[in-house]
Image 1: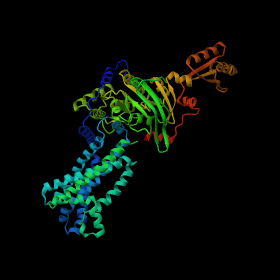
Image 2: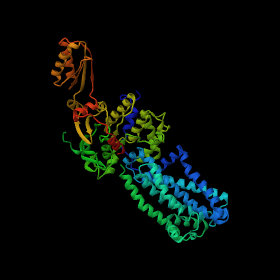
Image 3: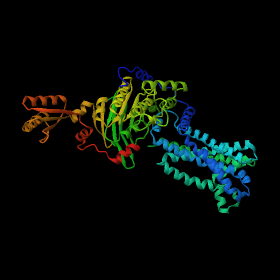
Image 4: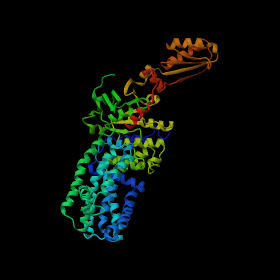
Length: 274
Length: 330
């Protein structure tokens, strides 16, 4: 036998530590769980496929597919469409937040987390923090490729970076919808189905690909009310230096609103998970 | 059950109820666990063991009833409860994708250790649980026994006042099972109260100071191992006779001593008697020898979980697919 009751000074010794340290601060707990999410990327780097391949495929596909037809040249269209596709791509990959969480929760480790006395939202906030890194990576890849293809924002790099910052805020808000669904939907597959059903119309019925003024009036109304349109207009405006402060504020307000609605719902579902 | 004051009790639960849909998975369970003891929760799959543990460990909100865990009210002071307890679930309660060391550091950080302190603590635990060599391997590559050890190590990053162990040895080979038993005994010596669930009577017998038998969400019997045995009987005595002609005489003698009907099988020349304790078995065997009956072989068996249930409920322990599912989901 490896462990003998009469001869286990190490075991007795580790068992003698009974006093728990003071519980970690919310920030420390969130960062620790963020570290866990980063470790998972270390072990399964394939999971970065979505944030690396999506941007490349989307940008190349839509630029060369629509460029000639819509703007007369791919170069001009690239300048118009890149901020749009950026918003579209990042919005699409927010759904992986939910599927990852769903997978995680089906295993037992969340039960252990929930019996530890740390700030409860940390498990979700930590995962979302790492998702921010993923969104940033996707943005960097797309912008890098865009520059190589001839994308030149009129607002310069600083405007574009501000745009990315606004986009991250928007994506953070959007992610909370998926964390909620990730907690209440039974399987990962069902969750994928639901997210696709929401995200496809949401991203296509927007100003991502075309100027809304070419659409029929009723569609224009729908598209103009789509939160993705607001996000696209803000990012595009910041990139090209044509933005009004109000547009940016609306996007930030939408993000804050999403968090205000879905974060408490998510926490409720998390605390009352079977 | 003797009346205990709250100060002496690790768990004091009254009338716990949990429903999933229209199914009453836990149906009014009341139990008291004294501090510093091992309480064994014995029952078949789907009896409501896991659901009860989850309620006591603040993972599930009871639909009815109350409980005090380590002096903290389960409903009013869940955080207070969480400060004192630890849970090792039936299924993966560590992250399989991560290494053993990373898992321990993660839990240590979440408990509040500093970065350096967490590393130190992880090293100590890995050494104590003989997992140093596997420390940097992903947990999914561990053997069943190593898996269980890292699970338990993660639960005692700080030794809790109360540890819940959900079927700690299910699926383990005998050697790993003994290792886990030794760890549990060491934990109790160090002052931890252990609440464990099991499907094995032998395990409850070996470890637990008190045993609660649960079936269909109800506690159907409770007591020390010997009290339960007095209820159920110590097991069965099987006697093989050399001559068929002796069978009826032997049967009469055994029935006289045990006071219970004895099963006889002509073909194998075998008698099976339910016995209350080992003394009774010894008395029965020596009477048979004194009467000049030639015994070719005899054996004693502990009552199985099935026999316990048969005695206590009049029907065998069933595994009902539906409920087993609810238990796992819960």
